[in-house]
Amino acid sequence: LLSNALARIDAAQHLNALISLNAGAEAHAQAVQARVQAGETLPLAGVPIIVKDNINVRGTRTTCGSRILANYTSPYDATVARRLVHAGAVIVGKANMDEFAMGSSTESSASGPTLNPWDTARVPGGSSGGSAVAVAANLTPISLGSDTGGSVRQPAAFTGVYGLKPTYGRVSRFGLVAYASSLDQIGPFARSAEDLALIMNVIAGHDPQDATSLHAPPQFAAGTPDDLRGLRVGVIRESLEGNTAGVESTLNATLDALRGAGASVQEVSIASVRHAIAAYYLIAMPEASSNLARYDGMTYGDRSTAPDVNTSMTLTREHGFGREVQRRILLGTYALSSGYYDAYYSKAMKVRGLIAQDFARAFADFDVLVTPTSPFPAFRHGEKSSDPLAMYAADVDTVAINLAGLPALSVPAGFETVDGVRLPVGIQFIAPTLKDEVLLTLAGGLE
Ligand code: GLN
Image (spheres, rainbow, N blue to C red):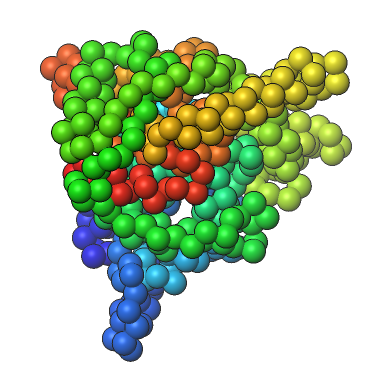
């Protein structure tokens, strides 16, 4: 399995999905073989896996797609990495990503952009674009990304695979490099609901090393069409505007399939989601500005030396961080500063509370809610990279879910042909807090 994955990775180098290979993979595969021969039953015995480059894996480089961490080697395993290895998985490499997970296209990586295998002129989505391409291009059957505002679901939609963002606290963040800690959550990519269930049963569950980790033992299984009967599905009205024709027809086909299987489908309004993008960026950027203060060249990564410490730190951050990361640190610091705190950060936190309340109210009447994952399929390289606001607006369907801490799954549901090229379209299902399992029941039922 390992040599097969390595051969595929080698053949797909032009996609630039990986930042580094795990030099320890061969030894890990042999250790798994020995454990199996000794009679151990391992749920992921020998399964090759790729993880996003913001997840620490002992002995591998963890660059977060940034120059500032170009030479940083992890001295420890993230909880998810430890659990994967314990379950017999073999981590073969680290996936490309937008720098520090800030972006929606995987164009801002210091390692260069990742290409979408469906059309290499287009982006794979982001920020977990490398992890999505790893699964879409058959490099490995499963991969891990992180989702702060859509970074697992949107690239899953753009590359035609499944991508799950679990309930906040369901999967440990210990060893995930922080972007916006109150929103960050690790999630898997896979090509079937069954594979998602397999990996979730390994990585989810309480971890004493993450103070926000929840006590909720994972019980994931892919459902069957029978499970769809009687399911109450709410279509979020606010997500029905501004979609391309192919996204609209894919959503309608999915709703028809649900009705055909005996689910009830109704529209529901969640008015506060109209403010989700503004609130999200006013919360994510301040958290990022605080989290990224640690990259001062003293403790981690690269250092630009100068005679005095202030100049050294300034030069380190000037050379180490890319444009988008610098922009967010500046805007985040601004929004938190006294005089602006009440107008921006504090107001955004109130909107966040409203959004969570509105979702909770909707879930009194519905088992799951549904929207497109993105209003459009994969866009072209360069199309939005010079216009930060256009890039932020691409997250319109995903960020509210992180603000409310909810679980959501992007399901590959159809295609849209653009300029003669068939591009995948994803549909997003949202479940109440801690009801992540329902999403895989539903996804299995739709397969
Ligand atoms: N595109 C969003 C952002 O740039 C979400 C990124 C993510 O989920 N990591 O913040």
